[in-house]
Amino acid sequence: MEPLAIADRLRAEFPGEILHSYSNQGQAAVVIRPGRIVDILRWLRDHDDLRLNHLRSLCGVDNARRKDPGLSRFEVVYNLYSIPLRHEIRLRAEVGDTNPAIDSVVGLWAGANWLERETYDLFGIRFNNHPDLRRVLLPDDWAGHPLRKDYPLKGREEWAGMTELLAKVKELDQFGFDPTGHAHGQAAPQQEEDE
Amino acid sequence: MTRPITQSLEIPVADGEGERYSLRMGPQHPATHGVLRVDLELDGETIIECTPQVGYLHRGFEKLAENRTYAQALILTDRLDYIAAMANNVGYCVAVERLLSISVPLRAQYIRTMVSEMSRLCSHLLWLATHALDIGAMTVFLYCFREREILLDLFEELCGARLTFSYPRIGGVRQDVTASFIDELQRFLDIFPSRVEEYETLIDTNRIWLKRTVGIGRITGEEALALGLTGACLRGSGVDYDIRKHQPYDAYHLVDFEVPLGSDGDIYARYRCRMEEMHQSVRIIQQCIDQLPPGPIIGPDAPDLVMPNKTPARIEASTNAYGTGLIKLIRDRNLYLSGDVYVATEVPKGELGFYFIADGNNRPYRMHIRSPSFIHISALAAIAKGELIADLIANIGSLDVVLGESDR
Image (cartoon, rainbow over all chains, first blue to last red; front, side, top):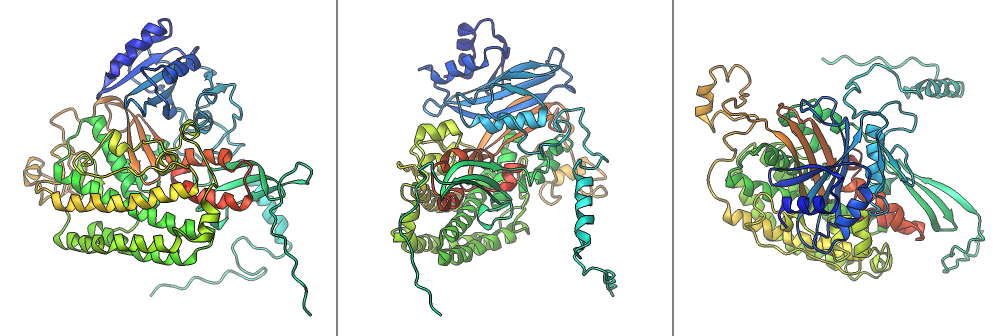
């Protein structure tokens, strides 16, 4: 099916949910409201003419630095592909500016589990009804969501567990362990000068 | 003093009455192929609950890429799946070319197809070597590394690197192939199919191998699709999905090859799929060598390093190009478009997708990497549940994951 034809079918089925659709480099995308995301994706997956049965990717976007007006701060992007019919569509769900949240699609694709956890981890977008919404790439005690545009690229703060780790080193030190790998009580060997 | 050996051949079965205990496997475990940690909840030897934990190798590539130009971000893709870095580079370049509407000369397309398939052979050889080693077949490991060494030498001759190549460029490739490279590659292709048959004689009907793989880690086609599995893991379950056929890129629509499909969806089916893929890769490389057309190797509007002897006209256009390290950006048209695009390529592990948002700047506004390993590890929980702990090792090997790609 032609890329934009899928978008038109979707508009006919869910008139209140579709904000607009466009095509870029031969790929069609539909911008939608987040409210009925599970219904929309289930319809796309199970409809006989569409059968978009492969969730290719799911990711978040932070639009804070975009120049285009009228974009919501956070988006969740779904790329779908139909293996039997060989067509694709992209859905961009606008999830708002503060406390972004959307319903989880783990019930439709079990593989969405970690993709949603990753989006939560890196963007702070919450997924309602997710079975196990924890951080996945970063440690559980990490503060902040790195892929947000206001998160700095470089930082000076120490990792929260660093104090604990240093205390542990000190505690082990009395047993003769030295984190530098040299025997306890001896000075580190002088580095030989390169001739 | 001798002690009588008493050994029971019965495998203890979980009956819910035994004591449950937890075992943490990894992150420093040799059979996890990197820094994968798996938290296990066990009853005897049966896995009740399996929770994979990743992130030990997280380097923030997506954040880094947003702060680098398109050409600079290319080198990050080397560090994704470092076993098959060439395929990652090609995937990134194909995606950026689609995003920015950059054309690639036919010769460069053929060369990229060729190196992608060489990289697939590299990856599958390393997979077979370590997978067999995990299950206990030491010999295969040594044989596979013998052939992989030839491929790495070939890559070294091509671009000077053996692991992190950055050889493909946005709009083409960095350097042309030499006649001696083609000769060496032809010699390799002549011997390689017989070498694959050699591995097959070692393990294809080996009784231990069959016991460890047939019927283990079984996934149906629907389950595999729902879990998001791609590549040989999906095709082993009988789903015909290969991006090289579905949405061809580079020269894949010009070469003739078949997509091997399994039906059982167990470890053995995935093993057979990858072995057949090696034969098909040899076919593709052979056709690339035979059909390799003459011509330029980099497009006229590549936003990248340009070698001076290839495009003298461009050096004249920029007068101080020699003084500034031969870097020239095209300024005569609006190179950096805006818009978003999702482009997937078939890398050895599965579907590697790049989702780009461009805002007209020379840096990607957003780059999302859909890495097959990340999704394959997430599927491990569903596959390993209820199986024996010894089969977990076979399952991890069979999913063919690389943690550099998973953690990004």
